Length: 85
Figure 1 (cartoon, rainbow, N blue to C red):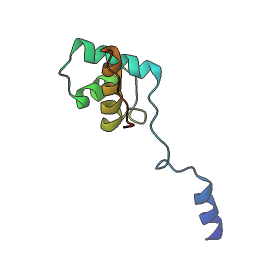
Figure 2 (cartoon, helix red, strand yellow):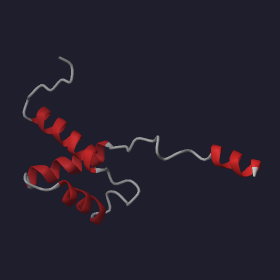
Figure 3 (spheres, rainbow, N blue to C red):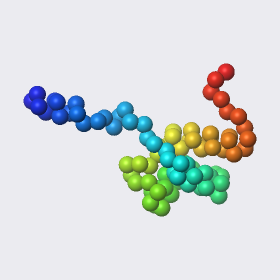
Figure 4 (cartoon, rainbow, N blue to C red):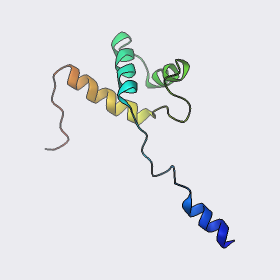
């Protein structure tokens, strides 16, 4: 039993790992939002999967896409967005 517990400790936890959004995925999301401004985030996820840009393990979650698409469009429009007061 002790060896089993030590094995469990050596396996990295996926819970603590933040999903990565690469520059390539950001560009693809920006292209989709530019061509389809009213696209739903779930449709963005489906498109990323169908076009082979991501797989089921690497597809960004809804909150990550939402956060980054807001930042990308604020930057594209020349708006400054700051979380500090």
